[in-house]
Image (tube, rainbow, N blue to C red; front, side, top):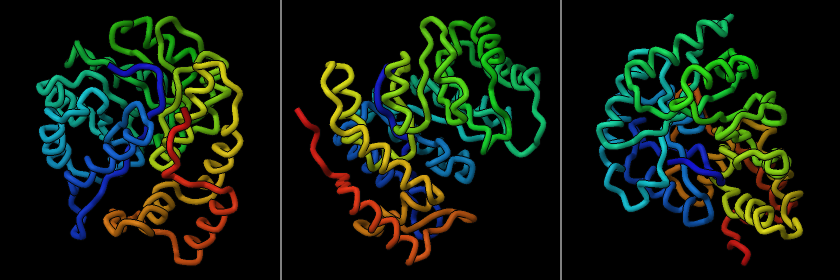
Length: 294
């Protein structure tokens, strides 16, 4: 069960032929959790979810079902098709996964609140025990949740709609619902969100800012003076100057070749842009391997 904390939309590590490298993807998540994350979501946007096949996702789910960190592993669906979403959720629930991050279908523009409501209604009707984190990311889905749309879903399905990842940033400051998890999609919003009653964050860049974000989270929880939030914001805003998936894979591939492979149309940053990114991060004295402070 997902709780308050720092989560990553975990990277997917690929083989040279573009297939999912299951073992290395798991090892990446293990490392990030050891470095401070409370958990990870596989097959979010950062995990190239829309580009990975249903069969590969199912094989991955079966593999992690008995993993020692199983309770810290969560799933996105990353599917446009309603039936694919239902199929994947049903399959994962056979392995006792319950919590899912689900985005409204992308590609077709002009989606209405009514149409999006029907999308989630049909998933819940087909899988009555599912727990859903709504994924609010207009930039990718073409649809932005309003507070009214979220409230309507929660009232209709109070046992199923349990939270929201807000990557459009129009909800996390103002939407207040009882027993509802709210996660800004950027660690740059982490501390502000925590002060407003949010639950933490689910972010792409926590794949590398894990320990830094955890330090900010823990200091807030323990009512300690914040010493790392400015650096955390600066690092996130630096990555935001590039395509996040390209930047993360480019940065990590400097240390590990396994991160060099992306599925088209995604590509690594050009060499000069990668050098620029590294220079900016060095200027911020950013060390992704920095240990958690006591």
